[in-house]
Image (cartoon, rainbow, N blue to C red; front, top):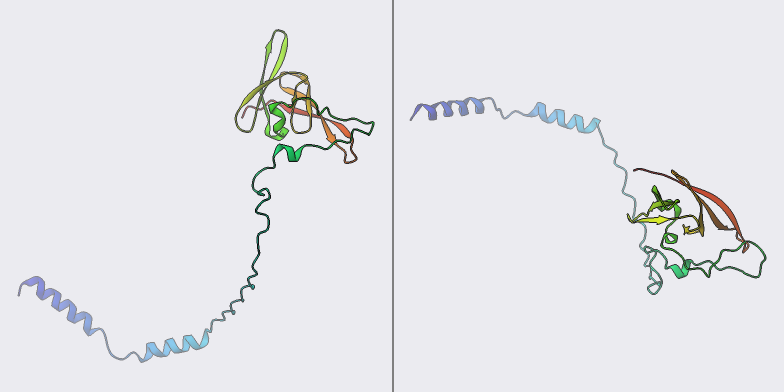
Length: 174
């Protein structure tokens, strides 16, 4: 035998000589520990009983898609003698966005007239001037300053009439 094999056999014999068959003290420790430390595991709750639900709205609009423009049009009672928006005018592209989804990105002057540059939530930029409309509530631009746009919106009051609300849009440079 070579020297390496002899060393290996000696090591194995020494390792095995340390093991004995008497494990009584170890078994006593395990049984006393198990007796003293009883784990309390709460019972698993029964799952709720399954009730089948038949979906009845296959032909209706999906709740995860926005309503079409026709469904959100205002119904105006023109018999009342109060402030009403002009629904006969053609709506602009910026009137399909809420004011929260529009940002003023700058202003330009051309032929002594100031124009506001307005960015939509989809990244398009539009040039708007005084008198033009934007927002969902018939908002009309009444004044454009270098860093601000003043807008008058018509808000329904619930009784068929409309009230004016002044809103502003500040220049943002995000």
